[in-house]
Length: 353
Image (cartoon, rainbow, N blue to C red; front, side, top):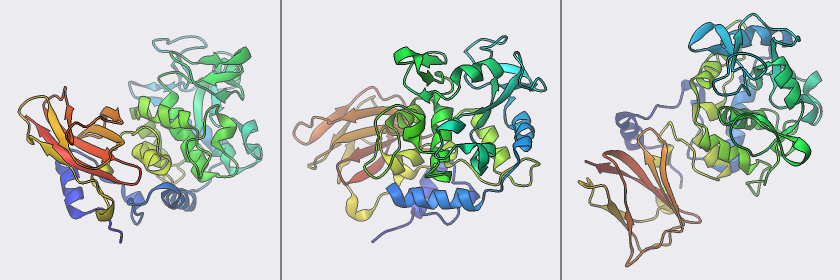
């Protein structure tokens, strides 16, 4: 027996500040997880995709990558924090685009040569969901290096500097673009070909590093801006399809597991009746900054999210005493408390006054 997202869930999600799924996703059952949800989203973004030419990508980038603070500039992926001039600049004049040093060009975030086959002679080459404005020379430094873990600003990492870290500011963007590309081109744009790391799923080739980056670097206004333009086929260089992981990063968690990402739609509130962990929270509402979770069942993880879906705490293998576990350091507000075991998951709301 399966149920759709309940009316109560949607009502509660609306009053506590969650957005509703865009109409673009009408008809998709978000009670699905794993491969079935991946397949449903892949079908939607493929069937709604209208190809644009490689020349049109220039047109798209001069809109999608506009600096939200200055409409005469584009934002440059891999640019360094606080830098506004030179190779490592985060911004560049919108019309300074070419292949010359000091200009910006089109960076294929899923490097074309890493595709199976090469992306150059395929629709993926001009899919603007993964093409970003980049400084010409910095684009050349990345070249076709695989993504790998790092910290700080972008640059080469690993043995002999053979890999590439996109930078703290850009790693979430990269992760969500690579997730999109995997759904849209499942045999051509495989995550294990473009990144170094451990496969996160038994049924798939998603890299755990991308799931981590998806959590650590939340969706930016620039990503939302890009998704809005490209998702509208009536725009001069619009494609008509969207990146689901920008709309809701938690979709990656539902498909591949891993660390719990931001849930913009309140999907954490939805549970199958027969897969629930029976538990209580007291006091609720709470007048202090601590509460107790009570259950007699096995619990592997407790996660606490704010009402806008941001992860506040994640407790792995909590140690219950007399079927109780104490949670501290909760500020005033609304929360979603989720308990998970190997095959069960239940979420409940909590109010701290």
